Length: 164
Image (cartoon, rainbow, N blue to C red):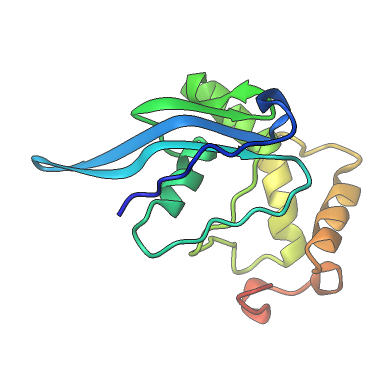
């Protein structure tokens, strides 16, 4: 069953939506079989709003998040994040956009087991070209604090719970 949404009516314009999907269509091909995952999804997510995607397994939640984050491409339709058309970006632009503006927490994550929580966060900033940034330490501390891990900064991944 594919995720199907009615257009979300918002009191603000589409341009102010943090995330806007328009007529999003995505199918996966398995041999001669085409399996629809998204069928004309329209969705607006406004800034500072708590939003959940809920549905049964296989209904298209992960596909929607993957296309919204530029990990996967749509067959048709559009994806806008903070006013920028993600679906119109080439690979290099999309990589830069994701590195600067998006964060993903995957069901099976990849943390470096010999590095602390602090070092794992810091490593992401170094990979994003902020290796010599004097504000890097403050950024790492702010991120750890925002997710409730400031007191666990020196813990390694195996010393943290799955939720942490």
